[in-house]
Image (cartoon, rainbow, N blue to C red; front, side, top):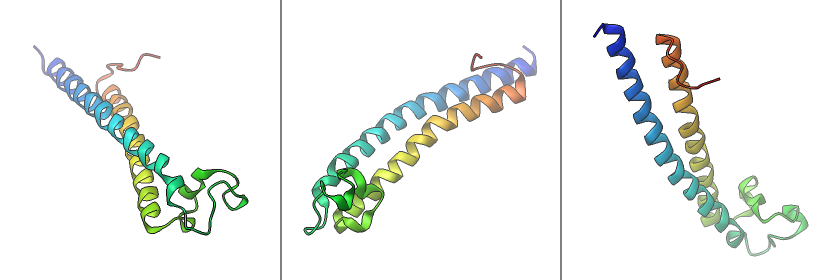
Length: 112
C-alpha cells in the first residue's frame, strides 16, 4: 500500500469518527436546547405575562430579551443559546472536515 492510500484511509476513519460524534453530541444538544426553550414561558418575572404585548404574544421572546425573565429563566436562556451553538458546530465540523479531506486528498466524501 502506498502512503497516499494510507493517508486517505486514516482521514476517512477520522471523518467517520467526527461524523458519529457530531451526530451523537448534536442530538444531545438539540434535546438540551428544546428542554430549555420549552421551560422559558414558566420563568417570566411576575409582572410580565408571557402572552402579552411586551413579548409580542410570543412566550419564547424571553430567549431574545432575557431581561424579561427571572434569574432561573435567564439561566435557561443561556443554556438554550449554548446548546444551539454547539448543535451548529456539531453540524458544521463534519462538513468542514470532509471539505478539508477533499482539499488534501481529492477524495470526494460529499457527493455533489
